[in-house]
Length: 236
Image (tube, rainbow, N blue to C red):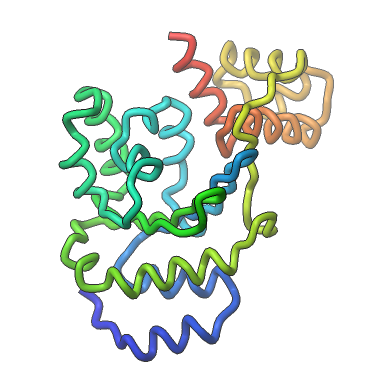
């Protein structure tokens, strides 16, 4: 485990106002990923400060978040926790097969364990999620207070509407006729490139990319690939 100078760490936290700097400080405590989320009545705001590429698309696209102890505890617990802790305590209330699939997905992306640090208020709850390639229970027990303070600093540095945050409406909007066509065409032709898809639709690749972003946002995921996976899962 990394040796930490608490005084130096706190001094650096106080001296920076940049979320990226705070993120790097937190990762230096032995974590390999950081995700920030905020939930307001209208929106969910996300910042993938540093997270395994492709994980969220698979996680949300296949609806594993609905069977994951880490996600369930975010909305039901009122204290910080480790992934391993909630998996053990919430196991009886989860679908065994699907919760195992969720845990395995974390492992496949190098996130064997991690911690969730709850911040924000009742109306705008938020969390800083740190992932770890190895068990982090001892690290969390030793550095919990320091991590909690850093999480609150990061939350202050990422106010509602910050440029780094990606807002997603809580109530997903219906797709337009063209957006539905694009989504279905990708499902029917999985090997097509964006250029081939744009040509078939009679639009530029830039316009197609803009549609992809809107489709992802309306589906409550971060990428078009995630929207495709989610649609396939819901169609089963």
